[in-house]
Image 1: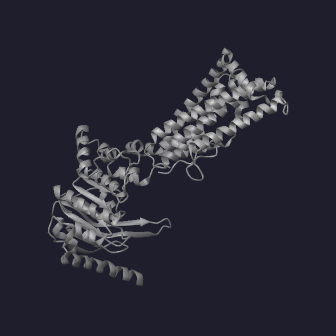
Image 2: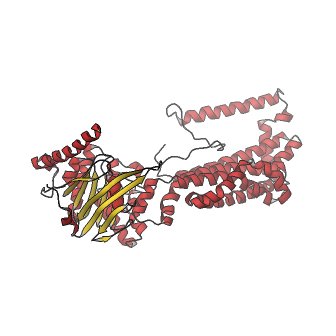
Image 3: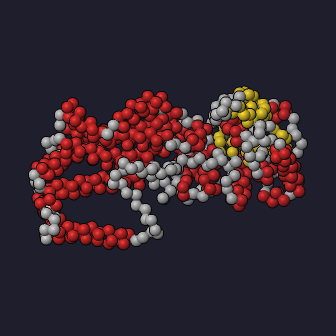
Length: 274
Length: 271
């Protein structure tokens, strides 16, 4: 079983693989954490001694103070909910549609030949360029946000699912046929399980891109959400607020990726250790 | 030891591939004959081996008999009536173990029964458990294929076919990829299992010793296109212990087959 290939769109997904030897996890923790700490101290010092203008670049203590303030502000949570709702609806719809269509397109050649050119054409367009058009059609409510998320999150998962289904080993298909498996049984018992690792990689890619989608959409034009909060804060030079929101987004992204990785290691326990 | 008149076996109950011909169409449009009027008969309870040089089409022949690929000429007869396509009375043990990597040993063994939706769940479960014991995989039933050795994977492959309780077991060089010791062990175990219920077996191999050791009758195929060059009856007593391989009668048969195949190789080289 080949491992699905991590593609370039796979933004922040790091496949940890020590280059030389095993390395101790403690060294990584101390060195890695130490460097982050060093960076933060440097940033703070630079800001305090006015080597850099705190108005533009803020400082770690300022950002943390602002973040703590925001966390007790109900308006902030309203924006979180708005972004979360747009993302959840859009990503959820993408996952259902992309997995279903991907399985069908991977398995039935006729369907693949029919739909692939259409999807390739849409995929070829830089989809954030469609934002002005979406605004005309949808205004800037939840429908607009969901649509952007779908546009970005749908394709990586669709493509991964199709190649996953098509990756099913011909020898396994022949084996199942020798036991009299029907077409439906072949799909269910051989092709879909074989596609699971691909689908899981696609899930992570689509989640990452979906998050990019909703933030870009909100930055561009919106009256609510974390992207709106960023653009609003930036326009009024509240850089500490910008950084505070970025921290929230990073935490959400990491949490989502981590939980998908957990799901992955549960579902593909059968794979030989890499 | 002498060639068997083909009409003798034809009347018996069992499987007969009569004048089977298989032609492959290459991408460039020309046709290659892989099998040329091959006749192989396997009466009920017989152990048949098919040996031949690599590329002689022995795997193709077995896949035709399994109904996995169509043949162009001739007929496949079961008890005298024609069969097409795969059927539950024939189970294949593949060369490559072809185990589903996401299923444990237990779930791989029950795979065929699941596809056939037969027998009922309780019976299928009981069969699986007894097969785990039969092929000596007790303690490994929850392992995934990636955690098993090559020999163990082939045991699962065999158990999966046996679970169907087929009349005919079609084995496609199942021990070809194993090391010599494991191979000998697996041959012994296969014979022990076979002695219990004497199913019909058609066993494809390129290993002459293996063919003579296991089979009642050996079909020697010639290289491309595959033709039946000779049929040899192996009248050695059963059950056969591995020591029989040192028996002069055994080695004489082995030598005869070796000469047949070697002669072909020489011819092929001179061509």
